Image 1 (cartoon, rainbow, N blue to C red):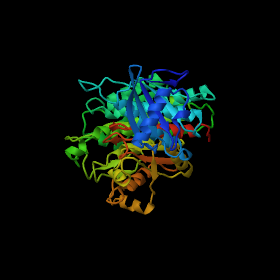
Image 2 (cartoon, rainbow, N blue to C red):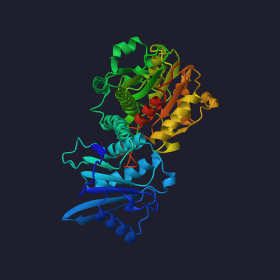
Image 3 (cartoon, helix red, strand yellow):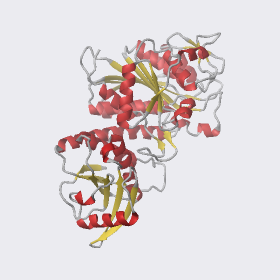
Image 4 (tube, one colour):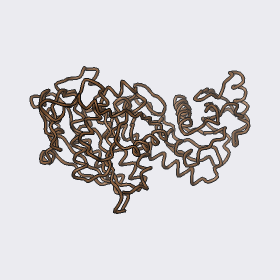
Length: 495
């Protein structure tokens, strides 16, 4: 999709999107032909349309034997206008234009706003590309319609700032859509080997380095918690290590992004229901978020050093699969009693985290995982659960969430709940009967040591059952924009 500035008045516009604040005056819009203004005024009066936040009205007008589609969209009180309201109202407008099969649209902003030109361009491009996304590669009869261009009708003070924002927004969106593609692919297409191959291609395209360890190398590293989960599958486990070094300062810190990479999760011997397994191709959404983020920060050339770690495997049933009651020795040396084979993600994560902290000498850790149904039950499908041991990192993550609209809510790492994870015959159990999201976070924390750390549980936010905001049906790509923005805020930081 082409996104640019409208340089001069255009007599015929196929689709016209007009975003107005309450009590907006369409006559004040530059470059909008009089016949369009007259039609808008008449329609607003006749329909008693109010430019309330995210309210939308579409209609057609005929002029000089040519028909134009008009989409009116409200942004509410202009005094309360911000990035989030622009994103949400624009998403409604773009989705309406797509439903009308628009190929080319002109966007008019009929209100004063306080956004910088960079922020305006970023949000426009990001929102349009996220809303236009669709996963249809397996359909025989595709809807071939695409919105090919959006032209912003305004005269910026500095066009280069607006264009810079458009470029940045495109990078955020394309990395998110890459993650969406990965998560939407079925498990017969994306499994550990092909996930690693995808990451290799991304590394080559976007400019970060990568190495992939096979199962023999993983065994030599004594990552037995990870490998125990993988035992039931014929698909060989892979450890994917991605490196981006954007800061050459010797004092610069390195941040590890660790993504859960279960390319399919049957639940193991604690087998899921048929309905529960239907979406388990998405249990690698954390891994997809890490790969997407590595691609985005490399393209943006952020001044940060980041390592992406993905322990990729399947959790299946076979004569070789691990059982309830097994005792596993993790790479850290801690032993784990398995009380639920469907609490497998944390077993892969803790070995991946220990590898990052012990072998790669990272300074900070963020893990992202579709980890617990409890997080989804508590916060639904629009808010990601976040836990951590570092106030500064938590503050920056919340700021990144506010900026991107990928909302988070902090859950407490309530230490007394750790007792529920104590085992009589091992150091820890891999589950607890209470506070499932929090005890999962506490379990992971036991393997982090003293490193500053955040844990993102995206079990509720990784998939959508219907379009909402910038998200389509299916994979949301959650985490890519959030982590990219977080890392951007860390770009000037050093030890």
